[in-house]
Image 1 (cartoon, rainbow, N blue to C red):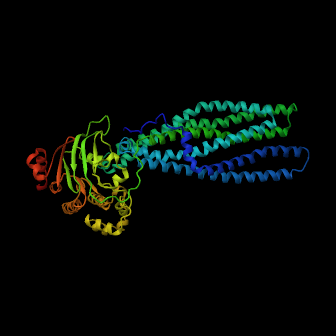
Image 2 (cartoon, rainbow, N blue to C red; image 1 turned 180 degrees about the horizontal axis):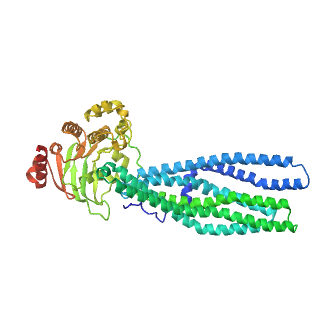
Image 3 (cartoon, rainbow, N blue to C red; image 1 turned 120 degrees about the horizontal axis):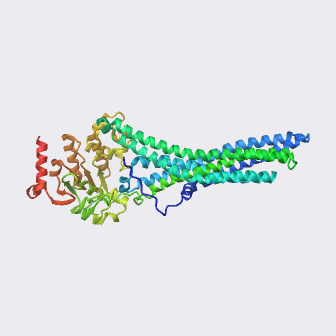
Length: 586
């Protein structure tokens, strides 16, 4: 299975930390508050070893220790309260950063050019929105705040150690410095392993989406075992990649513990010798050893910040790869435009889906006047559906131009252009949700009277009456609770509810029975009196009622005329019409 990856990151892509800051900026004050609380927590902890030294000295001098114990108790309570509250603030802020990233990414995904989506895998894109953005949570708390608070606390701890004894500080810094060098070597490996793991998760998502999207076909083909093996193989690769990433993170994380244990043993030996020679007091050695223990927290924070940054940077790289894909301009919601039907023209249009594929259109030229119905006919692969995709600007022609009302579609505001069009795709997709939500998808402000009228004209009243919750009934994923004909009628109703100036119907009645097809043919004929209707059709009954017919073959317009004219003078159309007659009479 080949996974089409998003476009690679360009050289102008900003570094990961700058992208993270753009997501953090709206929440900066909450983040600063959490950082201050974390620093206050560290400060209360730093005072404890000095108080312990004083307590030991008081005991040695047979002085009262009640005051020192009271202060230590107060500091421990304050440390717990500040630490808990600060942790909550930071984690809440981190979740808000993830929310900001997800909103930004999903908004961009919805504006992607159709060409970019064609080159990508839905499962992989889904992984980038879900699992990759989740990694920003740890990057915010561990890397952004952990590095700052952990670094400052580490610096403060080293200062306090210097106050206690410089020799022991030198021993400790030497051990910690060696650990830092090793982590610096490991960090790039964490980044590479993390990116591989995230890519593997995306590939697994692609494999699962591939199966679920065609589950009926898989079952009907008896291919469950083979597809199961494909998904399991993708899951295995994701597991292996995640294990590699976990290995390097574990090495980095445990290295800090080993370094501090080594530092403790060395300090204990050197410090014991200094106590024996009278260079320092026992209380000073105890205080210094407590600081060595206390180093564990800030060093762990710094190490987690470095490893978390590498993991998060890999996630941001994948997120930015999506942001590098070509997107449509932001289209402002279009208000009510002119009600007049639209005119459409193709002028020597050439088109191919990508540079490595052959041309679909080879200089297609035709014009459609306002009002009336125009049918497009021709063999499969003639380029009929592509005509509609170019009108909607899902794709742009590679040559020539497409005009609506004499104006190049490239010059239209995208929202205004699409607001003028009602489009029923070939497979008449229905979205998960209620029947009402599907009907109002393109016309959210339609009133009940308009909904009732479109239900009547598309013969959906009986369906609504049979459904347990009427218009509020959930139709299932991709409309699985509906028949193919019902989905087509819903798609047509959705398009008509927009009251479009231009109605595009791509095989919109192919799954309807004869009675419903005849009724909807009359509905479309009525619509054609008020608007411009373009129909891709194979049924002769639809074609013969058209005001004009465009015959296409191999990406070219072969003939234009009425049914009677084309039967008389175009051999391809005559053959198609004869086949249709035979099909309908059999």
